[in-house]
Amino acid sequence: MTDSPRKLIVPKNITDALRTVVYPGSEEDIVSLEMPQEIRIAGQRVSFSLVFQKSDDPNIEALVLASEEAIKKDVGDKVEIEDNIAVKFIHDMERPVLPNVKNIIAVASGKGGVGKSTTAVNLAVALANSGKKVGLLDADIFGPSIPKMFGAESERPAGEKIGDREVINPIQKYGVKFLSVGFFVDPNSAIIWRGPMASNALKQLISEGNWGELDYLLLDLPPGTSDIHLTLVQTLPVTGAVIVTTPQDVALADVIRGTSMFQSKSIDVPILGLIENMAWFTPAELPENKYYIFGKDGGKNLAEKLGLPFLGQIPIVQSIREGADSGIPASAEEESITGLAYAEIARKVEHRVHLRNIQRAPTKKVKISRK
Picture: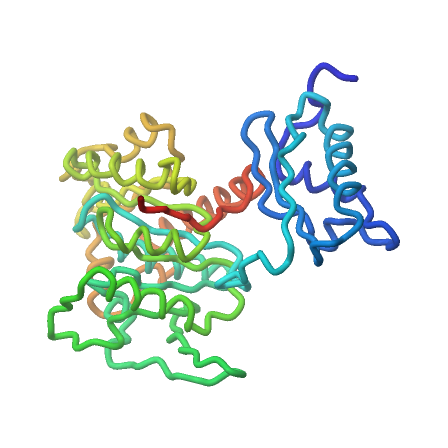
């Protein structure tokens, strides 16, 4: 018996340990059979579900005990695993909503006017520029702006029947597949929907979108916190959230409220990092000058204070505004100042997602009970 774990307790090490447990009467281990699911780690405590095909499987007790022993042997006897393996059966497991999407990233802001949608569009294009398969869902139901930013206001997604399902094919530009409620409403009319109507419209875009295989699906959320945010985390297992802010104090105060929502115990979506938009202004005729109109390094300092990864700063550049208005994202010009800035942020986002996925179990959909 050892006095401390021999290995770091992370999901990958737990999975590796369980690969040594072979299903009786077969040559396959339980990981290859996709039996261990929902692995969660809190300090020394490890918990997960072991999913069986039938409720009368005679190997249930033996495999639970074998799983406990394999984990103790691999990571050390200090691990808390006894009674933490939940036995489930295949008919109890939900079908994933988007099974072919590897990572779902929420792009959020504490308040409006900080350039959240512009950042979401340019981050999506920058990820696509690096060779990734990327989708973007305009979840800002009451103020959809993605169609305009892609120059696709006049386009309409086509419907298609695949098997017994009616699906909506996203529009694709600059390597990004995207859908927005803005495609289905009059752009000159105000969108006046009650909460349930907006939530149902969003669920339809998620479930009926023909997204295919994606490395990343970005969600452009409404500013602040609302029913739309709850609908998303109850509908999709969000991999992590990226927070967009500007340097001034009023925006930073709202960031704290926004991050606390994602980090709350009931939601528990990891914060991948913070982006500081409108960090400074550089006039075209004075390219070496930086004017800190909204204050200097406010977002960067806040990220350090809150212990959040800082993903980078985006300056105020005329081309960003012009690109958003003309439908040509600034990051489409990869060698421009803004293109390079978004490319660097995209690399950092990918790195944070990679770290998040090896250090934490997959995020589960939120189940909120109302008493």
